[in-house]
Length: 276
Image (cartoon, rainbow, N blue to C red; front, side, top):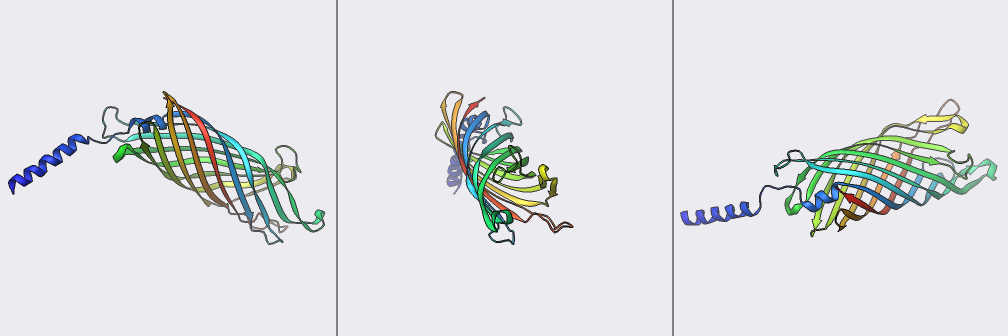
């Protein structure tokens, strides 16, 4: 029995020597410490719960671009058992024509308005978290989020460049990202996040219109691949899906109100990064 226990202890000891305390793997560090730029295309599906015939619906694709930076740094350099600092900042811009099919308009002969929305979407998001190295050289990164998103909705180009309705909201929340190296140069990632939209509203400066929204949820999932193609230079691609609601408002003294609405967006991007 003693010899068997000694043998088991030797096996465990060898295993510990073969697998030292976990630390962030070089491919993950290279993928997370970078400056990046990307081109993307995003599909938007919007529905407004309005009692008039047909309600308000929009759907279509918008091209865009994004820029960002992220860091993953050890809290105690030289100590492989320590956690890692994580931070990122990203900005995305999309613009183009998406189809609007709206509720009945009197000036359209009581027919639903079929038009184009000269849409502009903007989003900025900052993350702050900690990285936990995991088996296989991967990294588990929980984080908190702060940011802002906006949509300039200009149906039928009625109010000129930059006119029309302006939907906007602050966003806050939390998420979790998993990085997993595949070989020495490729890193796959999965990110899920849950947000609260707060402090937002809808306004139109041309008709002196403005209302605030309540707090509503937003959910987002991202899948990504990062490839170190040459030294510090990387190529990456990702796909995302997100869904959010705006609460709408109560009727004012004239009976006007902003209805509850829901938006689903998904898209693809491809970009280049410089790892530092």
